[in-house]
Length: 110
Image 1 (cartoon, helix red, strand yellow):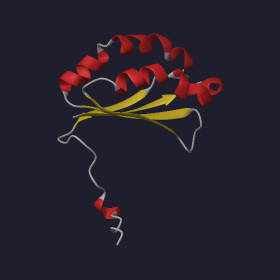
Image 2: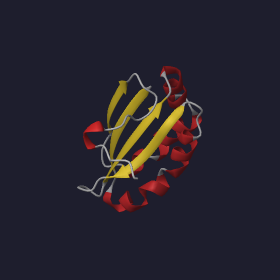
Image 3: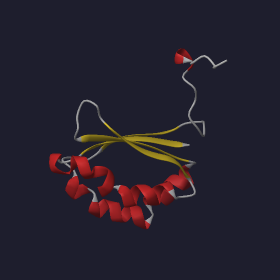
């Protein structure tokens, strides 16, 4: 899968509304057949920073995402709300879902 993490620093005056500002893009991306997940989190250290964790089934699905109409629309509508260009880590990994973090295994309930 293609695994992507991106950090978005939002202008302070738009930070509380970011989930609504990005909602159409988020919903459309989640509806893509090759999207495995597309999840936003807000930093606990910086209220203007949102972290996007996303994954796509394969290179074809990733390409379809960046070529989609909703991606092109987001390229126009999201940057005016940002304080800087988002930072990204993009990698291909040999799995299709989250692995368990064995070092913090939770015992099964009896």
